[in-house]
Length: 279
Image 1: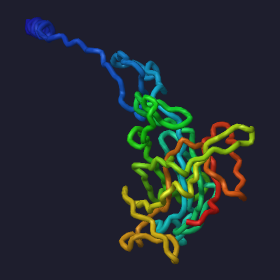
Image 2: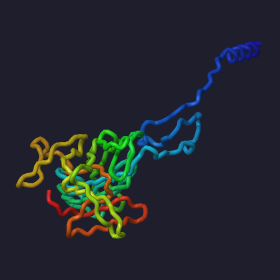
Image 3: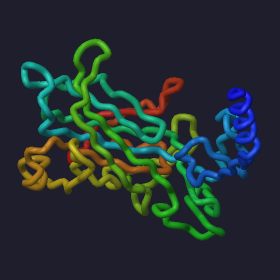
Image 4: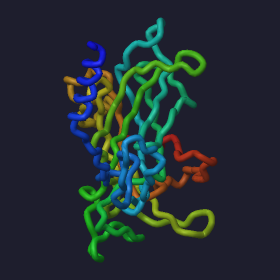
């Protein structure tokens, strides 16, 4: 009898539970940096596969990230002998990679590496059109800095231990990279195929700065007879000297004696060379 009474109570409780209808989720992400994104509103049900959502490039443009990796100072001790086999890793949006072909055995390495990474897809406001002369709105030239969502640039300083083992020595972040294209630094050159290509005079466009490897912060780069210096409060801090920004130019302007192979192997999106220009 007691079991029957308990059963009737359970049945009554189930009948009195209010049914809740799960409404479909309507999404339209505001940034392609948070993938996936959609061109139109898409109805998603709970449990739907991510493959049902397609990425759309309607409001994106191709850009290239130009980086001068110059030097690092006061890196933390990594090996028992007080030094380290220093290399670095760069992350630019979904691109980048490990640069360990040259490992410098020092806590104060000087790299003088010039890199261009790309092409990269960068979000731009829907009303903006891009042609060979730059960004335009109804035919009027625009200042791109406020119209482009430029991804931050992350550099990790690494100590190579053995084999494929690396130890993190510090991380620097460029949170608001510069847009480098401005009057006087962009020109057009002829490539080996006889076509034309835009090139960037990075020696004039870049503005180097010291970036902390302990926290997100930077301080100005000071040129002096003693070399690359910084504010006294930063003298003993782990730091990285670098210049970086984005451009619509896939190449930098080369010096007369500079020979660069711009043909990239399949799957590779980076070109590197040693800097001849002295900061």
